[in-house]
Image (tube, rainbow, N blue to C red):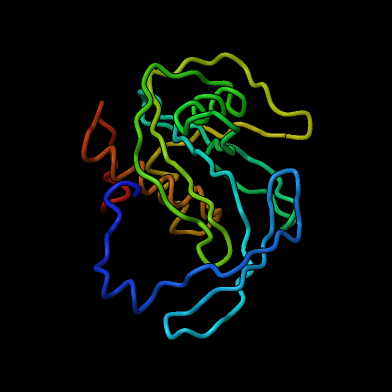
Amino acid sequence: MQDNEMSFSNTIKSQLEEKKHSSERVYDGKLLQVYVDDVILPDGTHSTRDWIKHPGASAVVPVFEDGTIMLLKQFRYPPRKIFIEVPAGKLDPGDSPEETAERELQEESGLICEYLEPAGSFYPAIGYADEIIYVYVAWGLTQKGQNNDDDEFLLNHRISFSKALQMIETGEISDGKTICSLIKAHLWWKKHNPFNIDFSAVNS
């Protein structure tokens, strides 16, 4: 169970849960595997569920002492668009979410951090994938230089934390992972406040 994830009574589970009867892997890719499962529904009948197995990922919001954060500009092939995103990447075998967050922060933005704290997690695609993304907040930042994958092209985009939250409202930030990560990081920061950031522009 992640964070303060809700638990449900056996009565509710019996009314809602689906149970796997059989499973067939129909695609095995570099990152993802696609399955077609036969499931037993709560009323005892059967149905089919197509779903994607994902290793999980970590996302990190790097916060500077002046209240700015480091985001990234990246072209995403499926929607054929450039997006503004938080540094993030999939979990490699044997790596913890925290190790992944530290690695992706350095590889994608060129930053290393003195402090790294978990700010929660979320499921970005519950209708068709089991992916979970762990969110971290980083500060005490030092620039060391990027180390991107050979097929990865990124540009750093440093803006105020307050401005990033406004860009969610305006639609300038439209990547779901980044929206959820910024909101979780904002909530975490307001509660723990390692150092003061002026969010008045957001709250007004």
